[in-house]
Length: 166
Image (tube, rainbow, N blue to C red; front, side, top):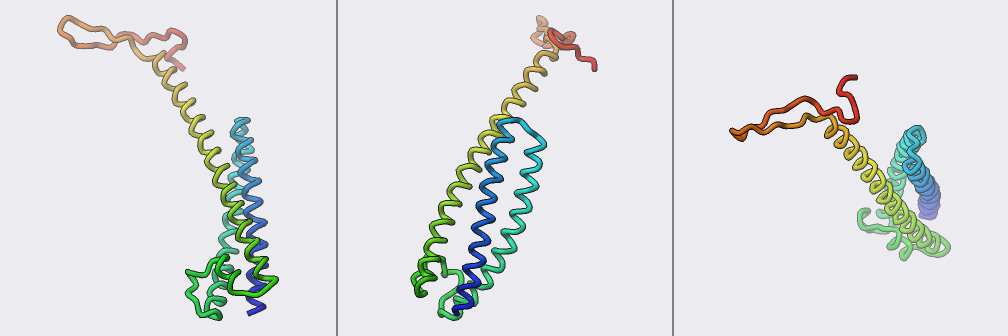
């Protein structure tokens, strides 16, 4: 069981590093969004994809180790959390597992906050683009003419600021 715990701690250390890298990538993404730097935004997207793949691989390994630990402890694997595991093992692993638990909670909260911030920035940027397109469309739209019958017929395009021809 000692070997399984050490394997788990090694995997957790690797995951912690990857999640910290993910947080840095999201911070770079935020800067790229604010600066409207499309190349940097594409680069951070690729970086995040690579990190997701690495995290998934470590996650699968961690789940495998957790299943073995759960069998040794006589508990269902799905109920075995870092918190519960830290209460079931001896020192120094108990403290290390509790530390990882709090570290992962902190990283998850930070990632969630910056992800929400990036989403709001992107939504705002998209709204600005939609507004600009609407304004341009309004400038090029025809001036409707109302007839006595109540029917409306499109007139010539206004072209007040822009020509309709490209």
